[in-house]
View 1 (tube, helix red, strand yellow):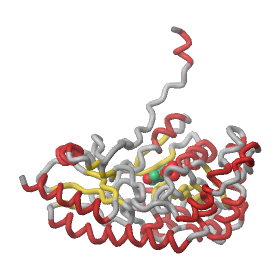
View 2 (cartoon, helix red, strand yellow):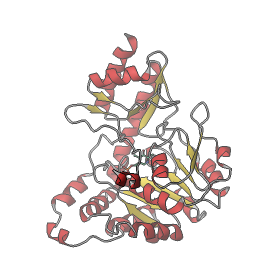
View 3 (cartoon, rainbow, N blue to C red):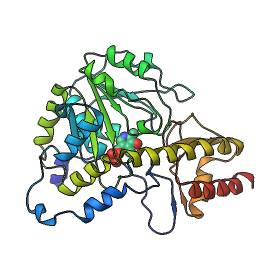
View 4 (cartoon, rainbow, N blue to C red):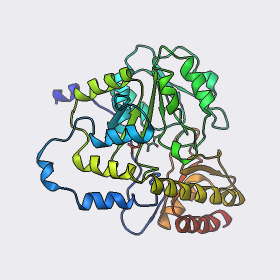
Length: 350
Ligand SMILES: *Cc1c(COP(=O)(O)O)cnc(C)c1O
């Protein structure tokens, strides 16, 4: 089978399980609350006849509404099919150097997959022993930088000051800050896009806006960056944002009160659960996201993972260096977290 020699072979990203049925799902950082009622209304009233036509290539009303809500010019806003699409396009566009791009060793496990796919050389920078990012580690020769803030799966937040230090000392590279979880209590670097033309900020509707199933992600950056990003996108697929997505996303942005209310609920639950987990013998970096990355002082993570699964509670566990004794537990609704805590009490005291 000689054709196989010419196949692009990749080791794909492994997404979290999507079990069906009556389970408590705390494994993929989805929001426990539904999208705004406005989304339901807009989709119910959607004019199906308009699906005959192609959608707007920039996301139309969704791009315009993002521009309005975030107070950023439309030509500094890029919309994609979830932030995975935005990040994949950004890797392809901006990471085109012979020098390695750099990112943390413990981080979003998609980065090395895209780097391998596009033949981008990369080096991972080890986090400190307490899973902290040291800004000095990012002051070195590189072909680009990507850092999630808060980091995933650790949940640890960097200050705007530390990130600005990295961005300003790397003016010859594009620095991508992946802010998938920034709405859960962190401070965004978004205002810095007007100061640094090498900064791309990526966010998503999947976590804080309860719309993982709709697939909306966005990037903010200077005009030139967004133009380069669009050039690559138009070289693959012009019509990425379908009309239903455009309508649903726009409707969600029209209900900032609901967004703030549900995010506040998730944060309140997270803060309530933190001391309880500590009492049960768990340790974790302080989380500014909608998950905690916890290790237990006596029971191995794999055992807890398996025991929880037997009880219909799904969390995330990776059999990888440095983190194989940790579990990433998404913050669900209060009742879900109570069931988790009861199960953890049984598992960790037997
Ligand atoms: C969830 C996540 C994403 C991607 O989310 P989308 O659903 O594709 O928007 C990107 N980066 C990090 C760090 C994430 O955790």
